[in-house]
Amino acid sequence: MGSNEFIGDRVIEVLRNSDFDDFADQIEDAIKNLKSKDINTRMEAVEFILGMCHARALGDLSVPPLNGNDWYKMLEKLAAYAKSKS
Image (cartoon, rainbow, N blue to C red; front, side, top):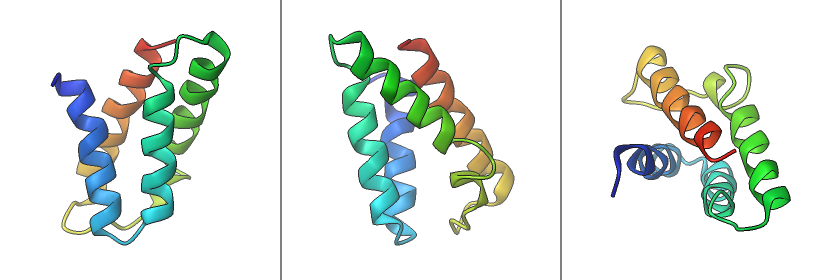
């Protein structure tokens, strides 16, 4: 598994471990949709992930044991992965 795909799994894991299961489910579904052959489905997933990776969305969450800076870096990597699929 590539490092960018791993970051998606890692973000989902952190969310689940912090009891943010709904967000984890949404991100997991969006990551699956990034692999769609349908351009509209893929672009909707890209936009959703980019929005969720914003500092005022998932970036606002407290996800121990990560500090804010480490969490932002993970979200930036996930956003970069999503952008690469557009």
